[in-house]
Length: 295
Image 1 (tube, helix red, strand yellow):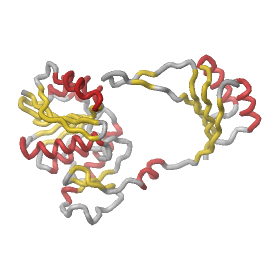
Image 2 (cartoon, helix red, strand yellow; image 1 turned 120 degrees about the vertical axis):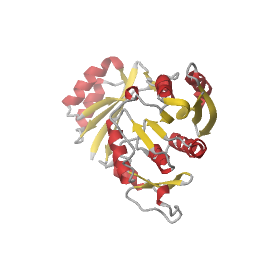
Image 3 (cartoon, rainbow, N blue to C red; image 1 turned 90 degrees about the vertical axis):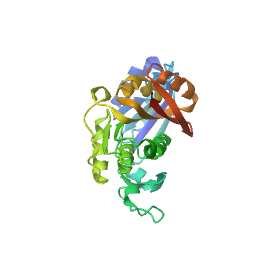
Image 4 (tube, rainbow, N blue to C red; image 1 turned 180 degrees about the horizontal axis):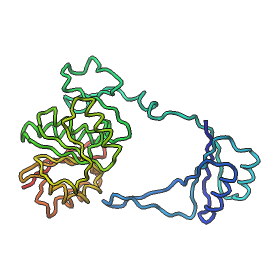
């Protein structure tokens, strides 16, 4: 168990003195509840500076009531709330609610610690086992499903021989491409934890022929028939020329991670001066995905 003291409405000019006072009381950590805003297609949000701030103060043992009252007397304009919290293994807690599900027809995502349910297809090639770790892309998010849907629809038509999955996460999209017959598959990710998770998941799915190199997009020198990028739209905009560079002439590109309220602006910006054109758009919830072609 640990104890959390939430302090609301502290004057910003008092932050340093307040933090020092908390550590003198035996606090294990102090953190500000930051407020963010993202007004455009930039990936990095802006921190909103306000005259007052909210703080979370953490204690491994409950501070004395007198100590808290004394602290509060020095900052009477702020509101103090103390709560006791249970220590939990949050990944194990999350696992309890993660069940097998139909990901993108006909593929099912199955947690690695469970067995396929009766309603799942008998064909084991349609089973994707996932141990998420810290990587994005377990199939539960709309953007991953949108990308998978576009891949499943496009592969039988264009029959690509090579795929580059940018921001591969758990490797789930590259794995679908492999299962659908694409012989050359490469997944890259800037996050070392994601690369580790992807390699483990691919080994679990007997798909170690998918390469997960320790490379960023700018390090890729080859070109591919299909480029997949399931990344937030601001990053896609930043990467658009590199994504186009690694796409073969007449190649296809699958994008996902575009917020619907920025859809028109995003695609207009993304294709400008790239030789790309949007063939198809789909959406789910607040997210948009698209299939593009290099002309």
